[in-house]
Amino acid sequence: MRILLPTDAWYPQVNGVVRALSATVRELGSLGHEVLVVGPDRFRTVPAPLYPEIRLALAPGRLLARLADRFRPDAVHIPVEGPIGLAARRLCRRRGWRFTTSYHTRFGHYLQAWAGVGGSLPLAYQRWFHGAGAGFMVQTDTLACELKSQGFHRIRRWNRAVDTDHFRPLPDRDFLGLPRPIFLNVGRVSAEKNLEAFLALDLPGSKVLVGDGPLLPTLRARYPGVTFTGALSGEALVRHFGAADVFVFPSRTETLGLVTLEALACGTPVAAFPVPGPLDVIGDNPVGVLDDDLRRGALAALSIPRQACRDFALTFSWRRCTEEFLGNLVPVTSAA
Image (cartoon, rainbow, N blue to C red):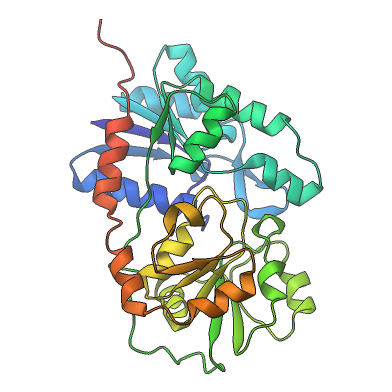
């Protein structure tokens, strides 16, 4: 099958959406499918407000149409509601092509965190955007129920997985040279991640924050006792996951939280709030502690066996996840 994937989230961005999409593209290729990714790298771009590392495509419609017509897709999937996503939605509507979409970001929560405004407008925009598709993929049952109650339709489950060959336990867990226990967070350093709920905790040992973002200078100045590494990738990121004793995940606005699976794959237990995302990944499985008292949860997670975390992560297969994605796709034209 030829699958067109026009996406505003793609390399060189580093985030959970890009990692999920790239893993899916890789698996699709191994299953014999041809995928054309049309990302911001193909267009002139401007930096997104507050997130200069995220580039927004300028006027992507004409080139996208040429690429799509040349590729002649059997299916189109639009994962992000940005300029490329809008252009792809418009193209499909104009051509009479059916398409699917997926849900990755709570815009309303993010706007509330960034600018103190939220309300119904972002949700209405997302409902309009996804409502034109023939299938709307979401990551968890919790999210599916929430969005259905908010007027979203044609919902299909598309779970997530983790690359357990890459994210794995490593023998050298003491390379950081920090007092133990080590409590780690990895992700974008921005308001919606609720990072101060972690950084302000009174915990023994050391705290490490891996990531970059608009709040990094502020938080670095406010919490001088925390080790801030900046953004890491590849083996450096894997080593930090594995060096930690507990991965602390303070976000309350995630659709899933792929980093929790990456931590578990490296053998590191998770402490998080009992909110959608952590509830769906961890639930009552004995690989993490979900507690409204994040300090209590972080301390309790220290007693969780690391092998149990690794074994749990091994059950999340990208092959199975990609087959689920394939089953959700629709042909661009319905059979007459």
